[in-house]
Amino acid sequence: MKRWIVLSACACAGFLAAAQAQTLYKLIDKNGKVTYSESAPKPGEFDGQVIKIDINPKANTATLPQAAGRNAGQEAAEAQRAATNTKAAREKLEAARKALAQAQENPGEGEVSWIGNKGGGTRSVPSDSYRARLDKLEADVKAAEEDLRRAEGG
Image 1 (tube, rainbow, N blue to C red):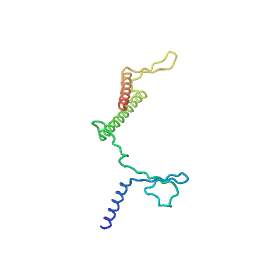
Image 2: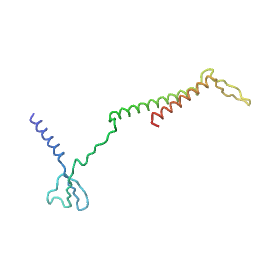
Image 3: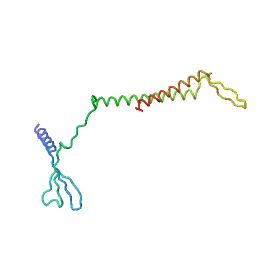
Image 4: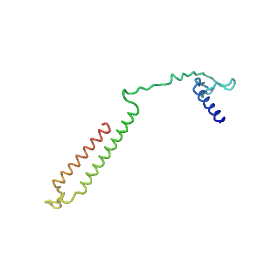
């Protein structure tokens, strides 16, 4: 118990000393090397220039303004919501693009007819329902791109 009290007292004294340390010494040796110290060198111990620097700890503080009606917690929550919305918009766009690519690469049965060309070979002719499905999927991709732009703030 006594050891704990002694350690606590030493720690408190150390904190108080650190809070009271308001003077620094700038030591410049004959080669121009600069060193800073919290204590002045003893006479004859240092061969160079010693400059005492008094520090006002209150002069080095700043109070940052806060936006009217908002605090850091609200801003963090809004940033989190924006990140979540952006992620969801990206996922929606990726799904829309994947659905369009899937429909283009693998038309269903009866959605494409093959017609012979005059000079030989064949060409595909999409059915009206297939064309309408592709148009809707393309519109979904464009809508998802616009949603992502809005979510990213653009």
